[in-house]
Image 1 (cartoon, rainbow, N blue to C red):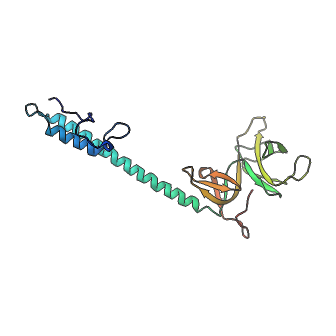
Image 2: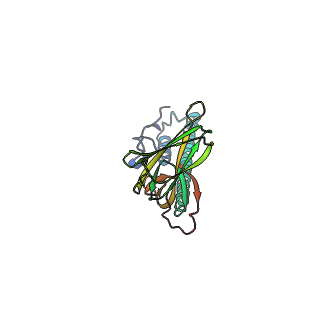
Image 3: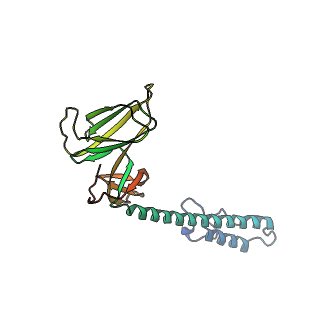
Length: 231
């Protein structure tokens, strides 16, 4: 039999341009209409054989299943997005610890948190201002692996107090053999706002945005403090 129009021929039996997707594929309604038209206009002397009909119905069934799966995935994606947004909004007012190296210095001593992948014989902490200029370098001795905290007094290498503002810090560490040790730096502060304009949640902490995926800890704010707790 010669297939009239054929399932792949979009010009036959389909009058609604919206039934053809941007990628040239038919939706399931157009597919079914085309199959019905093909059967109505087939040559009576050479009708569609059963095998061909079953094959085309199998295509339709497969298309319908794929569309159902896509719709379910879209629904699941929306549900997960709504859940993530709700969880992020609930963090407003909480103190979070997140991966990062920039912090807001308020003029008094500040705790700088970091992690060492192994015990270190020597640790170097370098603090820079918002222009990238080194203002303080601290050499520490033997330090254990895991989470550690260095309390910066807010002074430069000459012992002069520095002005409040945005700063950053890096941590380098070496073992007894002089081999570099893996390090990670963290920042801490109170969440004041949550933004969703980039398609994923970002927390406003100490004047900077932090991705939700970078948060490693959440805590209640200290008693008697407002939402301006920063590190």
